Length: 437
Image 1 (cartoon, helix red, strand yellow):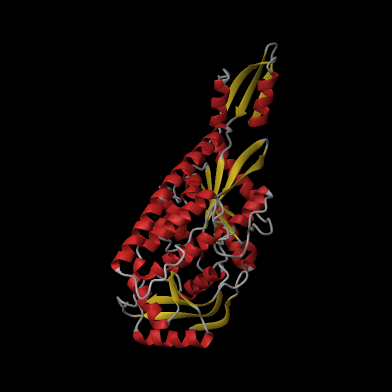
Image 2 (cartoon, helix red, strand yellow):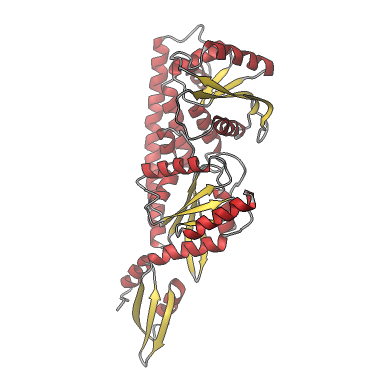
């Protein structure tokens, strides 16, 4: 199956003409269709402005140790490259360094695999200091295993030494030492950044507002929902990995309650472990969050498989989403479903206390989402009784501001209040010498 000219439009100025291949391994038990995998790979290429001139699913009966693909496929792809004047081939799978080098020799163009492509996107999108450091660390770790083919790139970084012929073992060892030294420096820099972030997180705990983390498959609509809830202007595009750095804003939950909402990097299938680690800053916010909103694109044909990918990543973080009371499943993009399917999704959400159907784009269902968030937070806010001197207007006003005052009656000397109050606020009051009865 081949799509030419228009498989994926570049998102900005084109940085190269690319052919995208998805190897369909015979016997693979992937829950996704080959067409869906190819479409996602084309989207990844478009996310960094590549002009996808052709895309193809290639069947692989037995992976070739030296090239992954068989000789017939290699020849047909060579003709495809020549016919479209392509400069780059993206293989939507994992290539060993040897396979990558041999395919480049066979096709006389640059070849990258799925990991290399995602690294390129991360490198282009990371905005925070930590994000940039983590991306460089992941890049170097990936590159180190491919020194047999990536030495010329390193040479250009050094300003070009003008070597003739191929690099010898001595050159590879020099490159490896150079990478190892840079990795060591990056780890030191990251240690400093992480300590600073830890201080910021401690400061937020003292505020104290609950933290709500948005998670989901890339392009599920997290940033659009973030903008809806915060009235912010975070980049929200129909593009894979539009958000890569954690973005945090304060939101008003009503009734004087506030929270911190954190948007996170979108998860994706087959994301290597060291790339997940590259965005540990974002994932740490998820681990410590009071509420986790798992945003799903229910209009996507692979919505169920995407859900499993997200649950798998959360499980790696020690969060068993299907049993964790903090997790609310947000069934997004119901506006894109046919009426009958939209009604079915709404019925499913109505039957489950841990699911809400919404459209972040139109705002439909956001009232139910607010109510679900409030219900989850209320479970962490016990109802307590306080006796406060009527002369202590400051504490009484604080209780009204930070809690839900359910009942109040005054006598000559004291105000007696029943208040639903967060545990952190209870601790703050006790620090001021005011204790529940």
